[in-house]
Length: 261
Image (cartoon, rainbow, N blue to C red; front, side, top):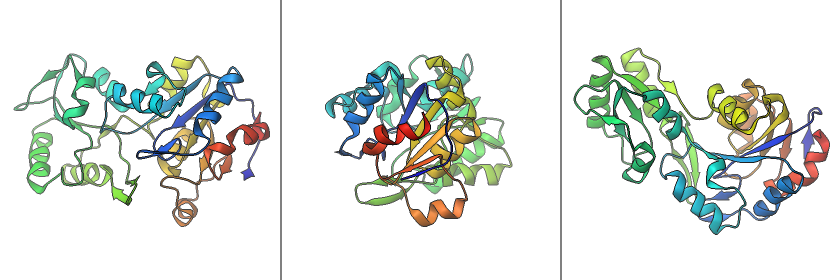
């Protein structure tokens, strides 16, 4: 465990997959660590870039693990996408299971104002689909990327995430995507505002050195990197990003919090 500098923490944000669980396996000590934050009267929230499940399913999963984070305290990029689309229309590239989080938006598959790119699974973004998205963007559609993660951790190892496909569309069209999830500064600031805390008073716990740690640092938050999930020491070192705390796992958070509080 290492420390960087001290601060006063008034809220704690947890990345979910890789921090509290990996796939269907709970990380030992995760429920107790979250409960300890609540016992200290610190607001907690769960932040995730997942675009494979709606908020209701994520809340059910956390409840099954006895992790005390309620549905109202789970933040995903889908909600921000709906807000961004507003009265415009969109074509959605998301899993059917996520459609419940997009209820109420106008769908237009022929002349969309926005293209929403989410996780379609390992075989989702085929060359034909990428060409379809490319043509829509060239015709004037804006790209909404639910996130731009490079890779993610599954029980059988690392897998490509949607970031490489978003980057391919950006490169081919010359248009930048609007990134809605981590590491978007607006995403982190929106969560802090919902919890009524300042970014500098907020601690983000994550396993992704770029999206979780780098992104939240750019937004002004304090950070703790856990060595679980997608953590890879060589990759972390290559980024040059340094968290305020480095923890073997989230189970070490209660003791480590004393170093920065």
